[in-house]
Length: 134
Image (cartoon, rainbow, N blue to C red; front, side):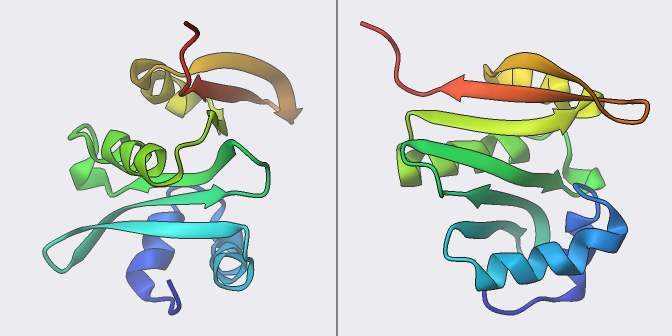
């Protein structure tokens, strides 16, 4: 991803505070450890997954957003599948709020409460181990 367009801004606003979207997008463009992948349907961006690859053997999902009309159709899971296949990490993790916990649990992530990280907002760490014990 080298250029930023309006569709990307609107989509990422589903995953982060609207006033932080442009900074986050610029960070994806400038950082060698961050990548933003887009999911397309025809000529429309329907989802995005942002990752951080700074930690060896671990992928940190920094943003995951699916357009409202495309939610509950497997788009988010398909994007995580893509990351698993492309990077083959030992662990995939994400930090999220209560609204997204069920999505991560259905995929198979273990979910741990981080407590109230912000006033009146409980946050969760979600961890998926891709390497199964023998």
